[in-house]
Image 1: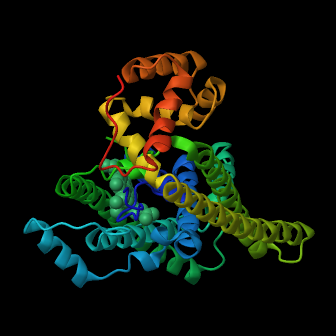
Image 2 (image 1 turned 180 degrees about the horizontal axis):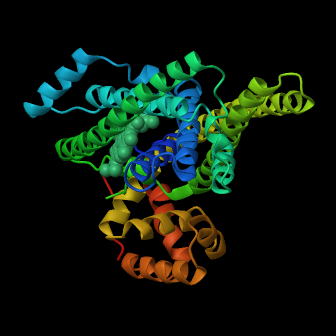
Image 3 (image 1 turned 180 degrees about the vertical axis):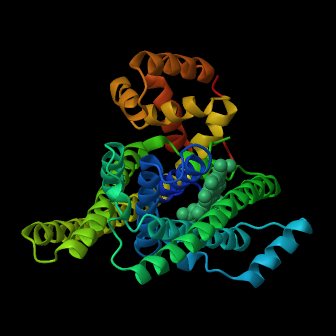
Length: 210
Length: 178
Ligand code: HEM
């Protein structure tokens, strides 16, 4: 008899996980490699990233079992154990992300949160529409838009100090994201080989039947 | 592996559309909230601010409702799929084995299964998002691989199994009758 299909692993991630995944990946790569920092496109994509993260966060609480944070808690010890098993050639399926993958996912989210937060500090929390309007004003030769936030000398100095720090953190976190992405892709490939199944397929359109 | 025809294609499309809609709403909401906050810093008593804050609250509620609805739809689809799996479990295994014997390709297996379920060419084409000509060609290939003359004989092939021997287990798949 055909055994009832109790899935030991995800054969197709739900649409929210898939959309937010490729959306986040797209924004990270585009903003790191193509758009110019501070440009309207860069800031707009950053705000889009904020929306993707927000949606994924809500989904991590309200979504289906395998998408919930509780399905892949951050657990460094389990992650190490998983890596040890992997090296020893013992592999097993998990109902959601494997413990090492889960740690990677949280690292991503922390770095992404940092990039968004510092980006907001650097732009003074201006929406992309305001950034565009400011740019248009400056283009007409009116530089006052650049200093319109200043209220007093001291707060101005504090402000610029904060922004400088934010800028540094922004750069570091962005580079960290690219590093994590490389590690992440390597991890997906290694795990796919060990499990003898394509892990990317469930993130795209589902597994192909043999 | 049990036969899993793409009966859930429609459900998948629905949840995908709902999700995209939810994303658009969320993007809109984030931009709106940003705007509301800067309006608040400018002038919290302006009609503009109060209006925008109201709209934003409605958007947030809409997104939460949408999330719940999406979650429920996904759960429902999953339950349906599971029920279908169990229902077709016994006969499905026999059919699956037979399809393998006939060396049907995965696409042909889906089409053959849908044909067995009594769907006509137009319905199959619709469900699979394929042209009717494609489906017709696939059916022709399936019949020839199965060595039957057409749809009636194709369906009878499996009905015969049921009538002749009761519901057979997959241990005794019927491979004769070519
Ligand atoms: C900068 C680019 C990328 C970022 C920031 C990123 C980030 C993430 C995150 C946050 C998750 C967790 C998904 C969730 O639960 O919501 C994830 C999972 C995943 N990513 Fe990526 N990703 C990137 C690029 C890629 C690429 C290029 C591939 C394809 C090779 C890929 C394949 C996967 C797979 C297969 C999973 C699921 C792993 C599992 O089965 O547990 N990612 N990624």
